[in-house]
Length: 371
Image 1 (cartoon, one colour):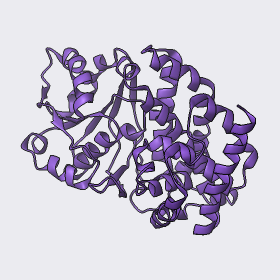
Image 2 (image 1 turned 90 degrees about the horizontal axis):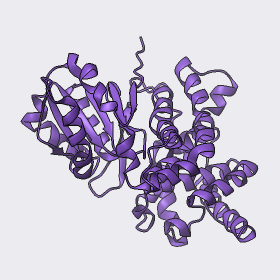
Image 3 (image 1 turned 120 degrees about the vertical axis):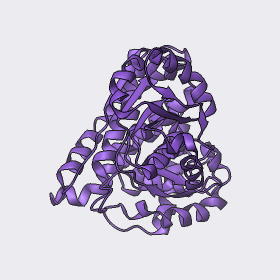
């Protein structure tokens, strides 16, 4: 038997008006977990929308600052979480994953309220977990994704623009990584129904970002809740999240096509002091170029350069403060991660190192020719 949960969602400046009708059958007591800033932005609108209902919201509970098992355990021990009928997770990816992990351990239904358009954590059936020092640890798989994801586009339009920017960089990886990881099974048609759908949906990510990305960034910088911004948010949160849920088998580990070397590059950067300071999606976007170089997709890589330049996404090692001396550390960390093996053919540390160097050289040459 196999069971698959897919996300449901609402988007718009008034989407919190839908909350009560959607959550009321799950109980009355709600544990509200998230980041300090996120909850300060979201809770006034949420409480106004729920005024007069019988839902009982806890006082705001800070998630702890890092998506770690230690913070999840801290949340699980709180009476207001243990005794809740459901969890409302509010904020960005790390707050979301911590709340999802705690809710998963306690077997409580979770509803997601992302306040940033930066990642798909609010609708995925996986949590990226870190050590307390911020280095990547592993993935945790709750039983199911959020029951429903509520994207208040007005709140997102007034969030820091750099998070949407990084979200584009992160989600842009979906098409390239899922195809790369699933290539052999797709070619032999030895692929199950769900990941077959997932790899097809992944191809919907790229055109949305290429066509709407520049305008969406203009809108969020002007705090404008525009059509293009909403389309990009849907691409980051829902389309990319749908791909994750369809391309990962979380119970028997039958398949994993959700990511590959672009995220492997990011995980390697989590132990490099300079690169570690940069946003997840920012670093992943450079990892996409590394993947395309490694795969000898030079034409596709070079076709991405104008979009990267227009959005200001990183194209060189200097852009993420990655010195040559950190490459051995980066590659050693990357090679310990499971996605090192999500490739059509095995790669070596030397090949990965060379792909990083060749990407840097190609980008610098293109930038010099396109000043």
